[in-house]
Length: 315
Ligand code: AMP
Image (tube, rainbow, N blue to C red; front, side, top):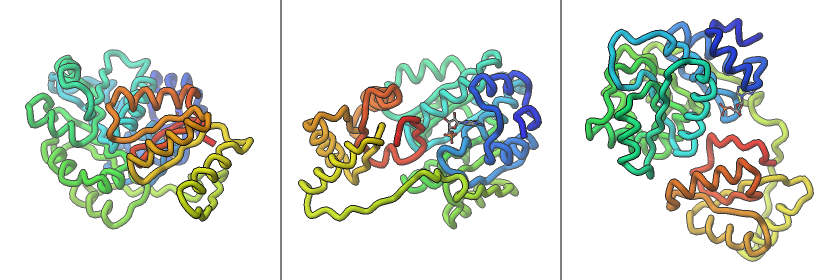
């Protein structure tokens, strides 16, 4: 199957081709036609499945036609659990929408200074990509009008529930038009997600992509039992020096242990940085960029990096 058989407008197909994609992924092949037909969707799909284009391409298609009501409020809202994912989705919108005229994409996340954020919102928004806490905050100060909203996307919905965003999500959705189309993406469609979908979606089409198939076949899992912290650090040092390790992510349970492990690896000569929620947004962004550019070999992170990050060099 090719992208141009999915019903997408030519400028969108051209942007997809320019991005180097030839064929839609399984998620895209299922999601795009249903989304274009206007259905609500409940989709199980993993990071790396191509789900971002799955929701963004049909959303962009909608923006090729003028809205009946003039205004500055967003027509598409994508809710994401983390700031990093927000940046990634914003970038995807810009790439896929490169051939469409006057599409404004704005990211609203915590940690960003309010004056800069307020100016962006003031200038008008077509696609708003946001984390729930800061969005609600901005809505309560009257800076965001969702009355023109046509498409609501809940990306990594299970993760948003895990992070305690349920009440925020419901408060946000309550202020969107009932006529909206809602697209929910989640790694799993467990009972919590199904319950959330029951209250937010209208007769959703359920799309489950075989996660076995979508999962990377090259992933090998190993368990190492360590005697103590010193032994654990030596094991880690040894593993990271294996010849076929290009870049690596090390997850830790706490922010403090992320800093400690990063310091230990730094003292052993690794190009390493920590990433966690106590860092300011500028530092988090620079760290992710350094990882993307290959300047970091090891990222030591808490679960802020557990989902959605797409870095090609990670072995
Ligand atoms: P996502 O799961 O949306 O985070 O996408 C994972 C990665 O797949 C990103 O690097 C995309 O640029 C890439 N990608 C998305 N769709 C396609 C496609 N149809 N063909 C090849 N790569 C794709």
